[in-house]
Image (cartoon, rainbow, N blue to C red):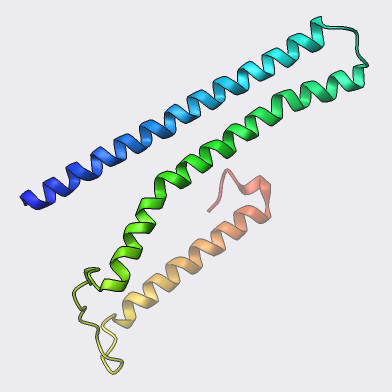
Length: 148
């Protein structure tokens, strides 16, 4: 039990550090995206007169590009945070230290079916009646309220 608690504590320390770095990256990239968008917007609105089409394109890109760049940065940060998991898996695979599950008791093909036929018939009739009532209600919209 103590070994398990120690392993969970080590996992939580690494998980907390990783999620903190991911959130810090998200906060900084979104702040940078906001600064870029506001700067370009103020320049287009308050700067020298520009063509309206060029102003529209520059505003569109000023809002979209920083957003998508911050998403790419967030995904790269998550990818880098998850790489140690893959590295650990590759460490375990060649050495054979990867613990295996206990063998399961699988019944043979010749084992008889244990479900009785009356249960299957009851399930089959219930499904058929449900489908019939559903189709009857859907086929006539006036009967949706008073389906029988």
